[in-house]
Image (cartoon, rainbow, N blue to C red):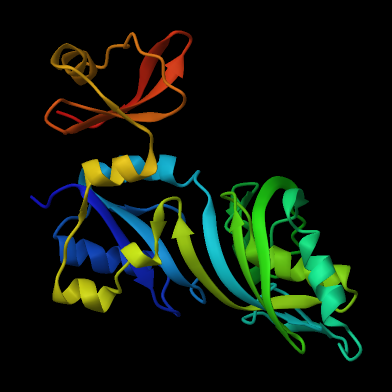
Length: 284
């Protein structure tokens, strides 16, 4: 059986996240493969996949912050807030000064109430929002809290704006493009998106499907857990308690990975009062 671990893929454009999962299932020789958050077909970059027992890490990894490089086209609004949608309005950007664009972009840093793009995967009465849009329905999603830790404007090339964003999980870069265009009074949409990081996993850790096809390997589950969570080393007695899911007399700062004396990754534990309790046990 294939080992358990993570595969950090540098997804190419035009593929769905499910396409990548299907390919990795074949390469790994197991159906037990999942991903930590989808990436739009138009987008490229980091897609984190779990194989076998590591699929149980994915729900916890989805909550970590993300990094993106993106290009926004000002002056054109679309139905999908990206280049794949139908144009709904075109406004001249002549006379729009770079300093004004940069000042407006700076307003999207911090804790925001963001209305997700209408073609998101959010469910509305049990049906995906994007499916409702495709079926010709009007979709009005509620604003939700997101955090943009950092937004850097690299270059303003006429109506094109190149940015990098570091943000909380659940932040829509397409919505930033839409809202920046609205703030400037000209509309806007996303023309390019590349995810550069999911939590601690970055493009430097990623390989293309072609590279994985030539030589398939996993980031071992213990290495993946150490990279993503604070690590706590246990003694043999504590490790025995973890193997049967017992609470530990430990004080943890937050969700932590716990390891046996030989380095085996055993479980994720979280603080509960003065003790630590299991969230997910990976041994056995």
